[in-house]
Length: 314
Image 1 (cartoon, rainbow, N blue to C red):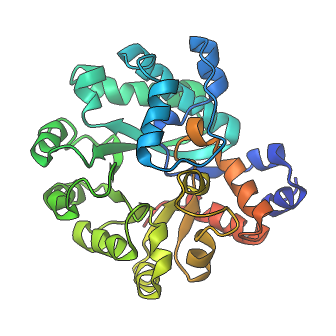
Image 2: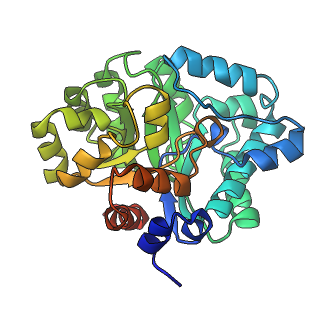
Image 3: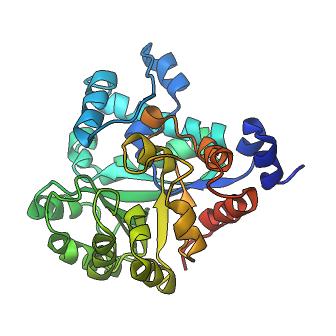
């Protein structure tokens, strides 16, 4: 079998899919196999072709393409299953996904065991060779006291691997989540948060220091400040980056100019991930190939990044 780097150089997508890879930044509601979902619902979900100008346009895409179709407990389960079908098809052997804390009451009747069983059963039945790292999801626009009341059902459950904060970076100050993250640290969870996609390099460092993050989802703004990149590198903070998402949301001008190159070559630990496959047509294998074809990173650099993603954080 040829190497991953050789498969990239041949631009052989099917060969690239055969190599193990991680997807550590995947929102399962939008992370599934579109062919599977079309078979289940009869609904054809087309990805974006042109960059959006704002997150509000992304929400409009969600409403037009998903809408009420998937807004039931039964369809929530189909979305979870679709994500494991996608992982299996794309050679993803480490998959980090999870439910929003508000989804526990909305879709699982506040039964935490029912929630974890849906994920673990899908992994077991569809993609048994894929390691599931189950994540607790927090929406940044939600009031902190509401999030804390939801989290009461999650604390102490050893099925969960990590916690992640996402949504509008400007919704409320990062300091508001400090107590939640202190508890999550005591629980032994890997600490993650979305930051530096729309914010600044300084926002990235502040979030890491305030929440004691282990990893950052996005974090691409860090490339704007050498001192922040140095801080991330020295503290071994990994950035889980989603290239096509960044391009199609207008955060970077092109794949060739993506700051993952500057971050990686400055010693920052980075990984390549999908974000929202249904919107961005961003299978992890395609992301590696796009970065290579654009000239952003070499095949050997991309192989090193792939192997980084497969390592569990110490």
